[in-house]
Length: 58
Image (tube, rainbow, N blue to C red; front, top):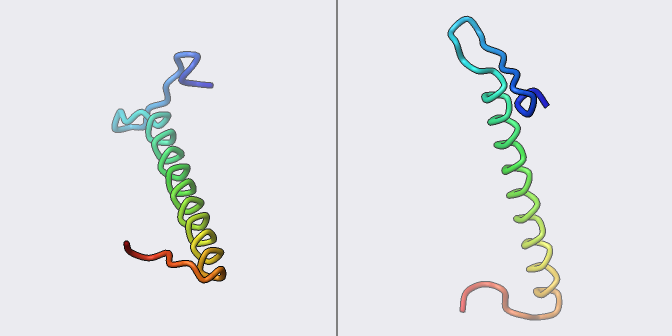
């Protein structure tokens, strides 16, 4: 909301804290997305393995 309203918060070194916090949030979201993708792929491989299918390699 702050960015949308043109508000910026700077620390004593003139670092824009809004951008650094947003960057941290984006990093966390990317990590959560990656973890969810890895878990989903692992579940799919486990399913196909239980069916006797080959899931690794060509």
